[in-house]
Amino acid sequence: MSDFYSNFRDLQVHEQEGRDFRIITSRNWHPVLIIAPHGGKIEPYTSQITQWIAGEDFAWYAFEGIKDGDNRRLHITSHNFDEPTLLQALREAHTVLTIHGLKNSSDEFLMIGGLDLTFGSELRIALQHRDFIVRESEQKYRGERASNICNRGRTGKGVQLEISFALRKRIVEDAECRIRFVDTIRLLIMK
Ligand SMILES: [Zn+2]
Image (cartoon, rainbow, N blue to C red; front, side, top):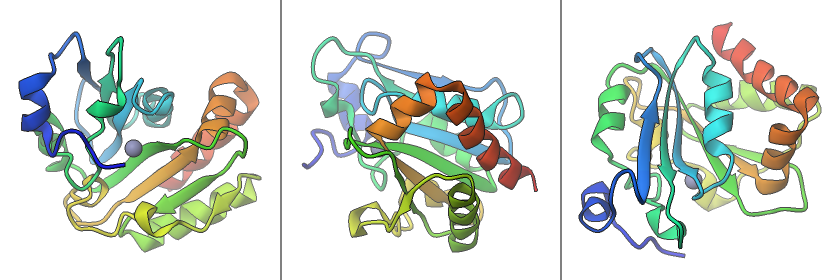
């Protein structure tokens, strides 16, 4: 499905901040930046998961859909996402991790993409070791474009996680699973 808006400026002309969407961030920027570009009702739970991973230690950013109606139209695909607050945060970021949601509501799994293949494969191994199912990334979820928001930090390469709806729901509702998921990622980043 293609996007309704081709970039943030296009969206901003038709949607109202505070009514249709909102932008929330950590108080300060940090070289580690966790991002939910499709938070709120666009890809449910991605904003919460982003903030849990960041905790008090890292910077985080969430663009959230808060419309009463169709929030899917607020989805600006990762290689077109150019909201200025985020671009500013990315200028200070060395490690970038974006959190996305896949629709699948029956299987608990995730897919890892982005140009930072070292961080990506460390993450895959660590998550698999803690019993999470990491599926081979489909082409469209590989995040290989340089303009993908996960690859726009200072190093030009980052990582994106595409998490199935079923796993997101589990992470939100099951504290044991949430701690296992969040700590695995946080420990790897802090290493
Ligand atoms: Zn997304």
